[in-house]
Image (cartoon, rainbow, N blue to C red; front, side, top):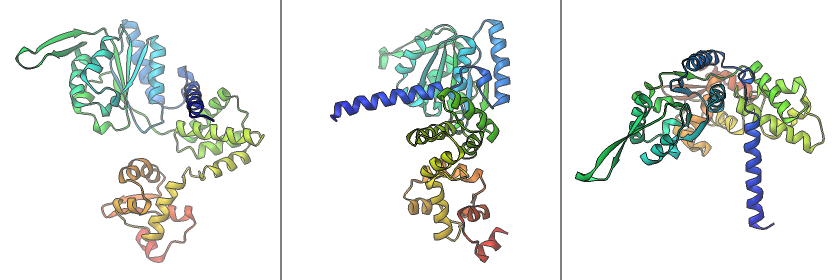
Length: 342
């Protein structure tokens, strides 16, 4: 196959993946499962804004990736019947980029900025007056001949999303007067309902027991649940089988996802702490060197879920595995470790 044909196939596969991800995204509030408190607050905010015939105030969503921040932004736009313009913090490199986006908004449009914590601080300062007074100040020229012009903007709503709210400056956070909402992890029952919806959209016939098994291993995250469902569907399709519990178990075993949702890298971190460092305490830099992973990757990608399940603890002296981790990996707890755990 020629390289040109491979590139075309890659583009087609990318389009198909984008279509699938978009297809699985709820298009109505009643199909958005979970985050009940956020939905109720948004309904009040949006209903009041529609009655006043004015765009709602600016909104910030934050929380771990895959919990539905982008989906909520789309649902807000659908509820308002407004056009949504999508960008991200890293994509806005210059003040001119932000000015071009803002001046092209229509009345009542929604600007959605993903990963807003990665905005340049200079761009943030231009964003402040746009959010507060609907205007931006642009400096034209340099030196003594430089002058400032003010561009009026149509009324709009900024919806921002971030996984690192601590990296947002206080002045920017304070301007989200419509509300700052934290998305929480989902329950297994909520994940099961999401999987049922996704299975219908994908045209997949799946057993209740299989749905329950996938939900148990989905790390309480809809994005992970949908990913596992699609991979199990592929496995069933290739093997000419229906999506039964047995097929799901085989597919997830092939993906090295265990009954707690841990992948091979998660287990490797725990194994190394237990077998090479007697369960800890051990420093993050040492774990990174032993696993050939970057410290930031361990701290931001792997540790949160291990901490959430109670398999790992952070102490002033370093990371420590728990009794639960020993049992899950099938290790006998040494006497000295038992005393430490007690």
